[in-house]
Image (cartoon, rainbow, N blue to C red; front, side, top):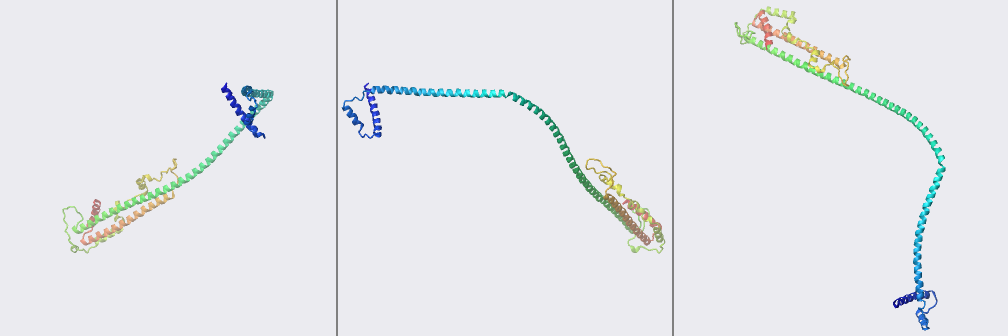
Length: 368
């Protein structure tokens, strides 16, 4: 108890000091508290007489304060629960009111639904009609697009045909130029061959004449009769009788075909350009159509203007070449005849010897 009393006295002193300090601050009394307490104790007043009662009242007040705090907490909990219940009730009340309103509006909703169903039916019919019209419009658009595409393809086909026709004419011209060049090459080869053959004949004839001048007879084969050898032209005796020469010249002038008799087979052959060109160049047949588009063309179409010109030119070239060859052959034949006549006159050979010389010269040339 003494400890409690000492603690109580300490609390009271502290409390009294706090009260005195507040009073000193709020009052005009400048007398210190300790002095007052000493004065009261000196007068015999017991200051601890109501300490137990004050402690009890203080304890009861603290308990009441605790109970009040607990009650406040519980009241707050109850208030939260009441608010939650009120909120739920309000929500249910609103739902019930809305349900009642909707229930009262059901007939109107039903009639509105019927009107909407009828409207949907009419809209469905309108949609079907519009869909049919759209299909027609789509078909028309597709037909127009097809027509435009057809026109464009027709134009492209026309341009393609013109291009291919131009290419065909170009190829034909190229082929005809190639044909002309090859025909010229063939004619050139043939003319060279003829010239070489003519040169060979002339060489053979010259060799025969040299042999005749040297040995006195045209036959190179060994024979039973031997002719006198002539070493130089000074040993040749010239006969004054020119009867054989005159007869030979008159016979040559009266019979122009006789001059070319020994080379008729060699130089008068007509090398026809048309058939030989087609035989030499079968791949350049002009009657065969040129197919560019994969379709067969009529072979009876008109020939190109260059074709006529080329055939005409080649024919003219062949004819001119043959005429030139004939003229050269005739001139060479006349020259050979004159030489043979001079030799026969110099050696004093008679007409029979000159005829045998011409007859022997032709076989020797053929053999060479």
